[in-house]
Every structure is written in structure tokens, then in C-alpha cells.
Image (cartoon, rainbow, N blue to C red; front, side, top):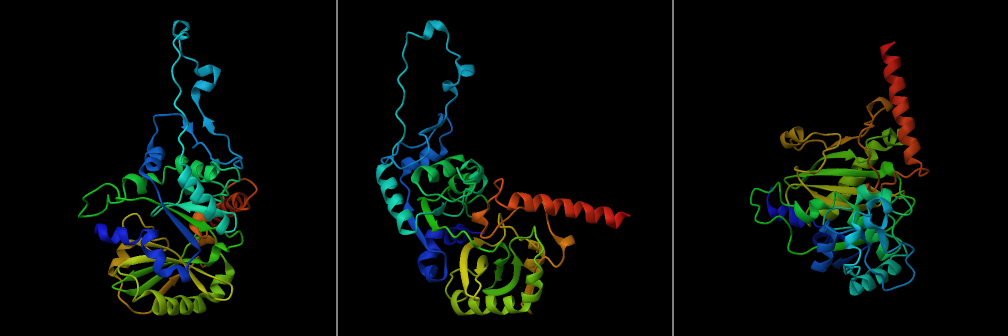
Length: 332
């Protein structure tokens, strides 16, 4: 894999060309000071000082010295007042973000050049990546370990690696849709500019309706790829995540590099590398026994909501119980 392949999969690179076929998104260049803030783990977890009064989150999320158990200073040090650093502030970025949130209907989910802070949804007030303020976005970004990939390791798999990070970082704010169906996102595998495979994106669940729609879905996705993507995306080998709406319109969710950190889902990379262009292989979970309870994904993947009461938490518990019961029945 080359750096160019990774770079072309950044959302600020592909979205302008494909925005009419994608989720509405507004993109902001991040100042280097904000990038440093995201990476700084030497200071207490402090949210940026807000320029507005409509953020519900407290400025200081957690500071060990605020708790009695962490008062480690000796009495002899009490007289020497240590200056307290003011909270970071990014007024220009916050103002731009606030305007974008309003333009996108009041709720967005954030991502950087490649990745979304999926692993930090638990810390948000609503347990999802849904954000309605700059503070909520900063909370998710600062809490995420998965974003370290974008910030520090984006080119680790590149044979021509010349840097550990891109020269610029961007914040993409994507319109929040509450009613997307998890079974209708698919990962497409493109080799030598030909669509060779399609996988159900949410592989933890068996959806009977997909079995009935399988052939039609293959036709719809292939037609969209040929008409709008094949000749317009620069790479020869890559993956493409798409969402199929109720009226069979196809929306682009994301582009990802071929191989490396991109999940092959119901395929494996070895068979994809060896695949020849014949009939396109669309793979779905064909029965309940074929689900993969350990791989928790959602549709789009960035919309993952694992909070208590979201439906997904109980669903996965039920799926795991059913899987265990099927295993016991098979052994009886």
C-alpha cells in the first residue's frame, strides 16, 4: 500500500466529488493547536472553554486533584500557590462548528480524516455519536483511542511511509439520521477497478429480508458502482461502504484502503486477492447460526449506539443467548 492510496480515502479528498451521492457533510480544517489538545494526555481532562452558554457539559470533566483522595500535597506546600492553566479555547473553530451543526439540522456525528470516535460513544450524554454542540464533539474526540490511528499511525502500513501523520487534519460533521436500517449497509470490494465482492456490513445479525432481496441488492449496488464510482475514483483497489435506502437509492458512506486495517467482514483478504472477475459475490448472513456475535458493528458503522436502552444492547444479549442455545441444541 502506498501513502497516496491512504490519502485518497480521506473524507475531505473524496467527499467533494461524491457529495451528491453521500451523507450531507460539512468539513473544517483543524488548527494545529486543537490537534495538540487531542493528543495531550499529560494534563487533566478539560474540555475547551466555550464561547457560548448553551453547552450542557461542564468545562472540567475530570481532574484528579479535585478529589480529596488525590490531595497529595504536603502541608508545607500549601503556602506556595501553583498557577492554574486556563482551559484551552478555540473560539473560531467553535463558531464555525456551531454554524455547521445548525445548518445540518441541529445534530451531527463527527469524524476526522478517516475515522470516527466509535469507541468513546459511551462517554457522551446520550450514549451515541450524536452531537449538538462543540463541547460534545470535543468530548468524543478527546476520549477516543481509535482516533490515535488518524493522528499518529495513518501510514503505518505504507511501503513508502515518509511521515507518521498527514500534514493537515480535518473535522467532518455528518448529518445525523436516527432511522437508518442496520441491515442496509454493505462493504464493496473493488479490485483493478472492478467490483468483485460485496459483504453485509452488520454481520452480528441475521436479517431474513436480505435473503429475499439478495439478487436485487446485487443489481442495485453494481449499477450504482458502474454509473457513479468506477470511472470517478482514482484508485484501482479499494473498498467502498454504501447504504441502500428504501427506494433503492444508494448512498456512499466511506472509502477505505484495500487491505491493511480495513475489515474484510464475510470475506478474507487472501481470497479477495486471488479472486477473478466473474459473477460478483454478495455475502450476507444466511441464517442465525452464521452471525458473528463478537463483531459489534452498526449502520452506518459510525452510528453505533451500544447504550443501555438503545435496543442494540439488549439485542446483542439476546443474540448471544440464542447462539449459546443453538450450540447446546447441536450438542444434544
